[in-house]
Image 1 (tube, rainbow, N blue to C red):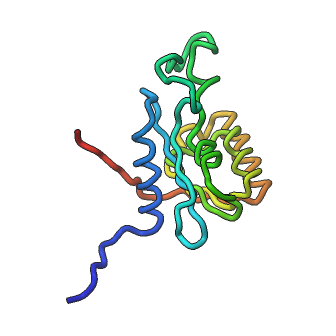
Image 2 (cartoon, rainbow, N blue to C red):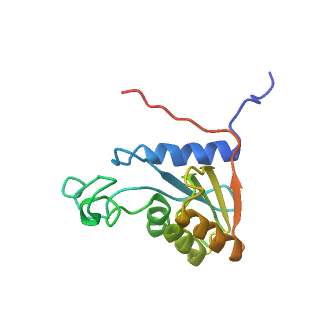
Length: 158
């Protein structure tokens, strides 16, 4: 008997992990996940977009529009930053797999933490100013950007 050959690639596996992490997000509009992986294909950390530790997600708004303080934007920690902050060790030299291209704030954290590559799937905000700024900084800093061609879908039936 021969071994199985229809296995997930490393990219599919780690992007799948990012998607699985995104399922923990309580954001009703956008669920984003991230997985940080080292050069030996070991998972260093994972994260998803949600409220900071100790801040009840029942006490803060999840709205996208309206008065700034009554939206999610000043409160939610993005998946990339959560993964960086939750890492038990340095992420320098690692790759980060994200289901949505990082914003400019996450780009700064990715650069400062020493992550060398971003593997992403969706780039739906490519024309937004914060994404344009993000790409500009990442390219300047020498962070490799790689978009996966095939979308990885994970559905969990309850």
